[in-house]
Image 1 (cartoon, rainbow, N blue to C red):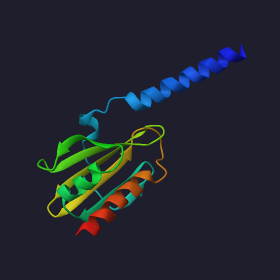
Image 2: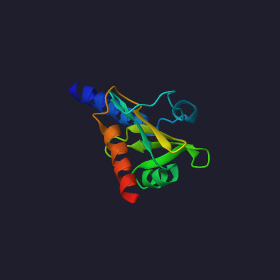
Image 3: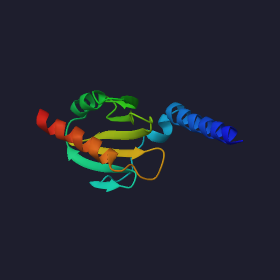
Image 4: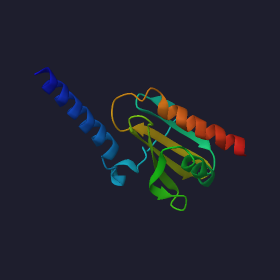
Length: 134
């Protein structure tokens, strides 16, 4: 009986991990921005509004490990990236929009309630590299 319970727990754990890694990302849901972006950290993400160039930030984002473009392009003026955590593969979504000379950045998690500051740290790292490149 104990072996059966352990097998059930193991099977459910593997299924959950597979779901997290393989769940499709719908661009219609994630390739969006709130109307107002302010510089603040959220429970499950972060927002930043800074001067910058989308093409330069795009190169930095694409060079980030486990990060890919979900939707958008520099030419469109808005790009959404998916960055997955190394161990569990949790997806985080970061949308960047060029508004004149300003970049609006909105990063958020998909699963859970708190990202433990991971999204804020990622975009602040991107912005630091952007500032160093100027």
